[in-house]
Length: 380
Image (cartoon, rainbow, N blue to C red; front, side, top):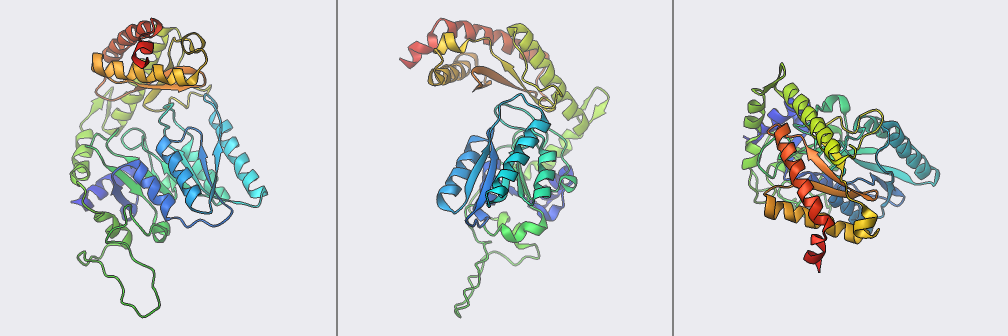
């Protein structure tokens, strides 16, 4: 049944099935890559300032426990894809000029906060050009945007299936091409599939208690990683079959889903931005919103409400989050970014314009409560 799920998601991704396995979540996949690579002095891990927080901390942990160092690509959205790629190339050249080795680059398909599409295709090509191991954090990808792994050909890719593919949590697809299977020696945690290096001291080899299998060591290792619930993984084929029946605006299946999600996300962003008299975060080319997310700036003044104090800004953010959950039975992804509060809107296929109109009305109420200082009494 695991093989059926691997085959189903491999077809969706246009990926060789022998490189496809499952892990509980995208963070586990990124950790699997970083903790398997053997770093040497001078190796540099490149990542971006919009990295998912847990992955950024994983990079820090690796630099604390191995000879590797890190380099963060700093920037502020909105900027063009070309500008971002240029910053990446500049960093690579500086690292090489200093005599160090840009070993691996970690980047998103669609960043989490702010929720924007990154030029991951171009970044993957640049990694190939400069001989850098490309590790794509596609936490927001499978079921949300078109992806062709044979064409993209990254060195490692992970994507949650429990977000846009609508399977239960936790389930993520982890893809590593065969050329790198020997590098991925251990799962997290290390389990029965691990093959120890020869000791050459005459001691007997440590044998796996798992049944004999004709599958690769890579696939075998990820089939059994301690006691976990495989039922979310086993839902993958049913989720994909269900998606084939979805129709919208003359389209069917994945085409219909991707088109509707991008449509409703942009419609929601325009609706809220007009209501708040603010704007949607995007660049001149419109590539940041070429996905299922839009980010709308909130009509709250940082200097007036938080006196320019980012600590207070996050107190306000957390108060709004908690108030929405406790009193309005909903959740919206807020972010404090570049001196302003933003809300990230998710264009899920079960949402309509009416849902976002309701959300807009609710947020207006919450904003008035923020301006009256309710968040301060909560944090007193």
